[in-house]
Image (cartoon, rainbow, N blue to C red; front, side, top):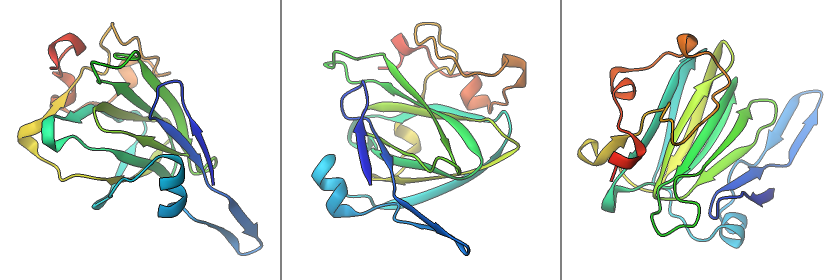
Length: 179
């Protein structure tokens, strides 16, 4: 596996070695020893998966306090634009974001540490998105930052009228209000 830290400290792109032959392919998607060598100790406690259609934008979500979550995300089927926003107030990159395409073709994964907002937009007809988390979900501690907050200036690469949102994502908070 190849581990590449991104411009925001603590965010990593992980590219697995993919072995292909006439039968298909094989790859390791997670190996604790390698993960800890590059990123550090993270105890993942749950795996989640979602399926979404083109234009669905999920996010930008985060959990506060003791319920903050680190995530290791990847796409099993399809293609998404994955976005992580730094919410660490003491960080020199506070308020900045990483946007990366994850797909079944490139097989890249993104590690997002605690205290980041996260979201993704489905770019093709159908996507299956998988992620590991290191903490339980707590609805009381979940917050949503507006996906189109002008201070973040995220280029989602799709026209606004093509984006499909839940009510929760439509009425999220501005970054400055999301303490």
